[in-house]
Image (cartoon, rainbow over all chains, first blue to last red; front, side, top):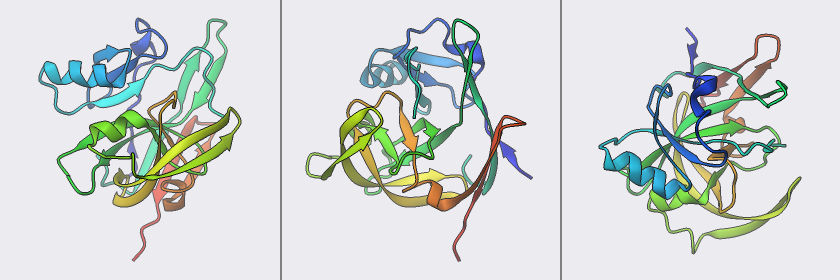
Length: 66
Length: 143
């Protein structure tokens, strides 16, 4: 049995500026918090009682990893 | 979440304003401070076969309680120019189980993490299936 990893919905980051950090729910289907820095997003997620979350970043529009 | 030695990861599809698609493979890992196991963070990382090292944004070091100021510092040269990395040993929870890995931390990394040859690819058989837009990873478990 091969497990398939979750993928966040394509539109999940539509309202978040490029370059912002994001805290996702553990099923990666919901945004818990977003902020300009990782420090801020950790602080915001934990201030609302979230202890486990996935840290991601909205890619800058021109970002292509080579 | 990380006990399965075989996993399938659908390609991440990003579309620009003109509708052009950009594909990548992203995987969520748990990073753990090996000397303080209460300090962990989940990170969504890009699987990058062109990266020699596995690298995370330097902010993860702070939130894992790692002091990287005394860590080995190296300069790496990539497509975008040269960058400084601080190398540190952490416990990485990968599909198939955790292991200790020497990873880099970089201040201006534009993504949470890059999973490269050292610390990631060396532990897997990986198939990129472009036709089905998915990646299969099989952990190489050493006896």
